[in-house]
Amino acid sequence: MTHIRRWLMPLSWLYGLATDIRNTLFDWGVLPSEAYDIPIINVGNLTVGGTGKTPHVEYLIRLLSGRYRVAVLSRGYRRRTRGYLLATPASTVYDLGDEPWQIKQKFPDIHVAVDANRRRGIARLMNDEATRDVEVILLDDAFQHRYVKAGQNILLVDYGRLISDDRLLPAGDLRERPSASRRATSVIVTKCPQHIPAIGYRAVMLSLHLRPYQQLFFSTFAYGTMRRLWGEGTLEPTALRKENTYVLLLAGIGNPQQMEQDVRRFAQHVTTLTFPDHHYYTRSDANLIRRTLEGLPKPHIVVTTEKDAARLQQLRWLDEEVRQSIYVLPIEVDFMRDEKDKFDKTITDYVRENKRNIGMAQGKDS
Image (cartoon, rainbow, N blue to C red; front, side, top):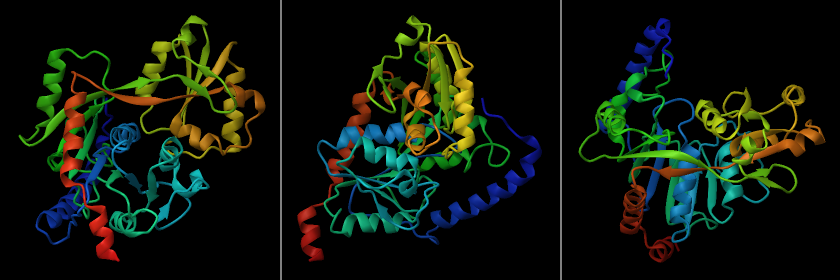
């Protein structure tokens, strides 16, 4: 449930006025939105914090990369570089940011680039020699970046933090008013519980006030086999309860509550250590992790996210015993109500119908 900081409402009114003026300038064409002759799919949200963007971007990569040359363009939040940067096998999490680095590690055959200026990033992807074969671009977290006119705008809404129940920053967690959702072509309600009664679907649908041109989907998380972050070894999540394992859940993500609830389905004993989203772990964090783990009865392990794993791998102060205890829990997206095929068709039809002719484009540039 969203926490409303009511004493900050006057600042939210000022923030709302600023976003209203900005959006009006885009709506009137005073500020330009640029369209491109290549399929561009934007995955974003209206809410500060985690709504599951990375797992949904990865879903789209799996859907499209077998048929098309896919590129992912991200801002690269909290990276230590500037400007446009194309990921290579030598790139680090500090070069790209944790989420783009994670995507490049999992999907080494696709193009991954970072640039806060999305228009410049798209132009580089389309025209640079190394990436000019790209056939579809996925924009990660660019719903507010209205200088780019994406062909598919996918808005993610957290089931536990519906935008209709929230307020603008700083009193709430909204980057824009809920009415900004009208720019979405599809809305996905994410992090849903495994079972929702029919009346629950109906209540969410009514609260979102969708337009006739918008499609609504519901998704939930599925968890795969855990793997050791260092060394060899895997572990099924269902084995945790069977072996009465004590779990230290380590999460530096935007909204860890849903993951904690899900891990408690697998394990009877869960202790959670949370850190800010995109947090870079320090020596004091390493000591805290070690002390907390040592305080748990054995058998015990550390379970963390793929996003945290990208940053933990850079943490040199973890002792060997802690390293051997850390397992990464992979997350994938499942669509509910048997609507996976419907969503897939929406995306693949759009890409097929708008795919540019690479040969013609390259000949023109030559």
